[in-house]
Image 1 (tube, helix red, strand yellow):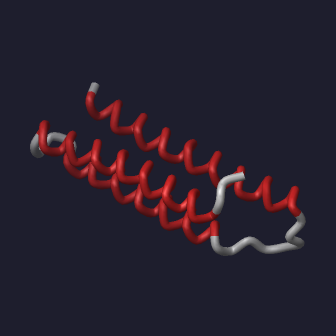
Image 2 (tube, helix red, strand yellow):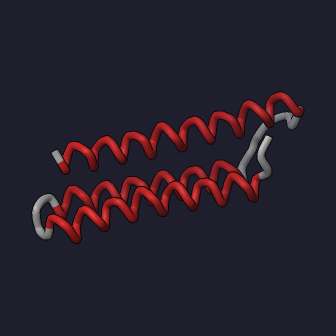
Length: 94
């Protein structure tokens, strides 16, 4: 299992990549779909904030197996959310 510090770094890195792609899209395409790209950035940042919050707020009995499942779910939700954001950005590019 990754450490919480490692997961926070991973969340930050993935968020940075998605936001960076959105800004690149805006730079290349100018005003075309700029508001939609900014809304993708906002959704991505909100997802990041939610994941960071969830990392620090485990509730319940802290058995090794439950903790492992909890953090695995956070990681799964992170990748699903970021994939959704990238798919939205891809649709704008098409």
